Length: 112
Length: 112
Image (cartoon, rainbow over all chains, first blue to last red; front, side):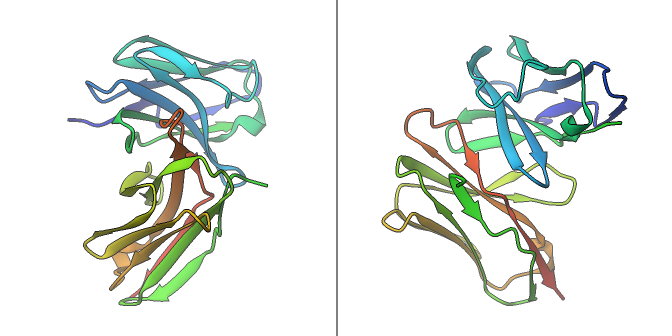
């Protein structure tokens, strides 16, 4: 298995632009998670899905952030408009069991 | 106060030393306790998992949970330079068990 796949791996954009991050979970996993990691705040859960349905989005910082999971093999996290404070590493993870979440390699986002 | 507190370090020890990493938490509902290891510029990977209280051993790694003190530990015996990484504790409750709360992470360096 290829593991969790994220794209792009790096993204540099200007403030105000729309950013779309993509994730392909491990086949057969029912849960998909989006996290954000910064030096100041550590690893924070933004939103998670179960069987393509959003379960908890309480970690989404504001309305500029949105996430979708149109099918079991694809999810997107969108930031519109982007701001410099959104600069972080964004991880996608998937899970089939409570105790094990498999993380992707992350997308390093820099908003200038 | 954060739900999960973890000293960010950095922690630097000589090769072969015993390493002790720990986290404290405030939410008595937490039942699932994990340790993740994150190498530089990579996603976190699950290292150890414990349900409720007690100890768990896996090779050179031992995880301990003391729910009465709301304190968890990870011990690394015969530490190796390849153990140099950031170690994150994570935990969740029975309700919404997939929703992990992470500690800040402790950056560990093992010196040859």
